[in-house]
Length: 129
Image 1: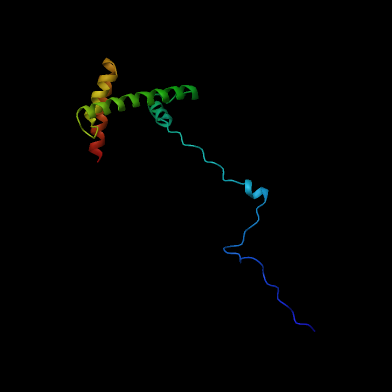
Image 2: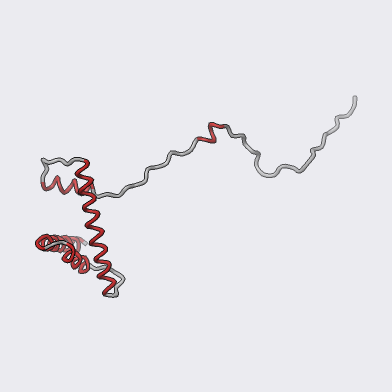
């Protein structure tokens, strides 16, 4: 009986882990993208409305308009307070800068009420700490 002869491999030896065959189905399977988070004040607007008028409801369109209004006012106040802090050559905005920005941006009686409510909120916050 003739002896078995080993056949030698031609070419370089493979390195690394063996390659897996991919099918068309597994190649197209991807993780679903998560939705981009959209920040809004809608929840807080709704909570305040329910405190003031529990019997009322608000439509989605109206809530969107109120949310846009709040964001616009917030941006205006932040921008003005930032300018005031820069004029004073300070790196940090203070409650005084916010108060001055409110007086500059909001008209007449509305600014007075906003300042008094803001002062009351700051006092409540500092007493709670």
